[in-house]
Image 1 (cartoon, rainbow, N blue to C red):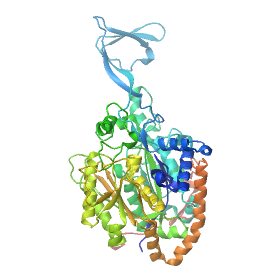
Image 2 (cartoon, one colour; image 1 turned 90 degrees about the vertical axis):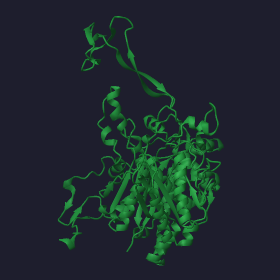
Image 3 (cartoon, helix red, strand yellow; image 1 turned 90 degrees about the horizontal axis):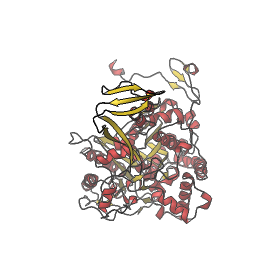
Image 4 (tube, rainbow, N blue to C red; image 1 turned 45 degrees about the vertical axis):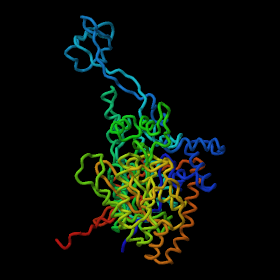
Length: 620
């Protein structure tokens, strides 16, 4: 019998704030929320930003609005006006005599250049005479050319929330996001560990770029060029799979299946597909999916800028016919409109999947379900960053599955697309053509299209995680976020069968049966996921398990909801609830209970079955 991967929890952090309990989503649509929900989200953000929640007047609210989402780069990570640079130069003596200078002996290079002559002077100093020109690097600082970025809410510092031990920022976000997702379940993780054998729990998470700041790969590569020492942590912590490894080792204590699938900007969906396949196979009952990216690093931003991919200050000025005035950084990302590049952002997101039976049995919140994720490459390409044909296949398959599940009428009238929507001139043409062609060929007259990067920026590996969680928020609060940063649709955008939302779209409960999450990544990494609404999910579960099971689930769910509300209230009070168990519960081989058929692990409620069946019995 088929098993449905049900979304029972989620959490994370991005420029809109904390994801759990819908707060990150609600920041996107806070201008249309009812007062109580808006007030709760303001307080959630105030706590996150280390503000006084007791004095949440209009001035404080305006500060929160101004210091979340896309905005001008602040100096909490680095000073954008004074980025350290090295300018190469050559020194000559200026006369017939050799160039001469005095330096400490221990500062001499180990291998002296042939043109150097060294003479001892007083104490530990030496005089160096150079008969040739001397190549040097002049230290200086420069302002960045890209000031628009999706930054975490001002005042939020994950490093201060746990013993970070010089962790790269991406891993700090990972610890926060995974903790938020686990705490959002409304049931203690130890209950799940008692209920589900450890080898029936999987976790897939990754960053796309790896950890590139100074505590990761940045320090590894910069140290020899800056006269510093490489840290023992640089090489290990820079790996893209550390996003998964940290959660296994320090948050969950998991002994289950793990992996890190990297697919550039589609990385989250690549990992989500692994979790979906695990649940559907029946071999796994729980799968945790995540991604993390912290790319607001001067060198990384300059790399994407020179590629022509980012919306830099000059490009934004040209869009709005400005001379030297400061651009409107809030509107830097303009999907499907006049635009000049994407806006880089930082984030980490995690979702928790249960199989349908476990979700009902434990009374979990049912936020929706994942029908499937489709992935296709582009084939032969003219350039690695350029788009290709693979996304036509992923969108087509996703649309076909949604139609098969929902039926023709509901599919045509009750689905929408969370577009990749980067805000680049190339994407607005290619992605709009893909979505429009699918809509036209599937008989959809006006397919609603949203693009939340207009609020958050492009969080690279985490981008499709942002889209998934925003879709859950849309069903919960009845609003699809509109693209509020644009005032027109560009002439080269294909839209004959699309309704590109320029304002928030209100939806009734059950109106939208599915959302298609689209993602396109450098290198030809295309993925489209089909997320089913909570109403559709419950309808499918009732058909499979019966009304009695649904009624029992509703009763069990009452205590789970109460627990989630208590967790949310504690976060709003500013009470940190990160899970970080460094060195706790470490198990050695001697602690295990081993036989020829089972493996007992202390702390796990059930033994692991190692009496593995032969899958090739018909061949052996």
